[in-house]
Image (tube, rainbow, N blue to C red; front, side):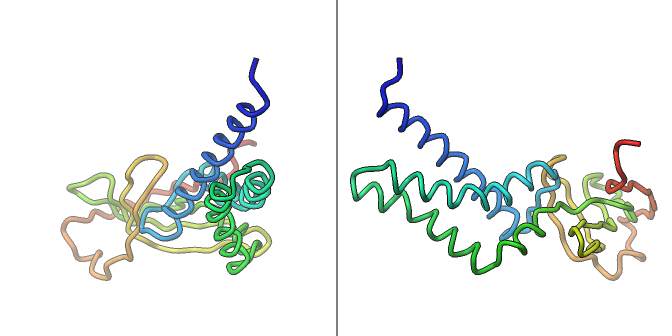
Length: 173
């Protein structure tokens, strides 16, 4: 049987681990050229950070007893909460949508994971954001985006494919 202290320590470890994972994924998506392609992972990182920040802060304030450990444990959630409040929780929620490929316009002859795509992003009641970018897929879950080179039409390493993908289309009839 698990004692009361080890039960609290177990929950603290899991809660703080999930919180730091959501911070890592958010930082990867928001501050690097690497973007999250998978909608469930992007929702977990943004909405998880939004909900886990106050939860982790309160948990660490209430459960952790030694003052030195408490100060260390509340520093990151406090800074995260300040960042969320500076950005704005609604802007945070609207940013939780992943870019979805609508059309693959060009594909690289030498590297099939590099493409020029037209993408759309659902921002709820505000409609859709649109962009055309050069994409390099790291996996089905992550991609790196670059601005499109204006000479892509005349470059021999790019082949025009105009393949309609429409990932925003509903999956269920």
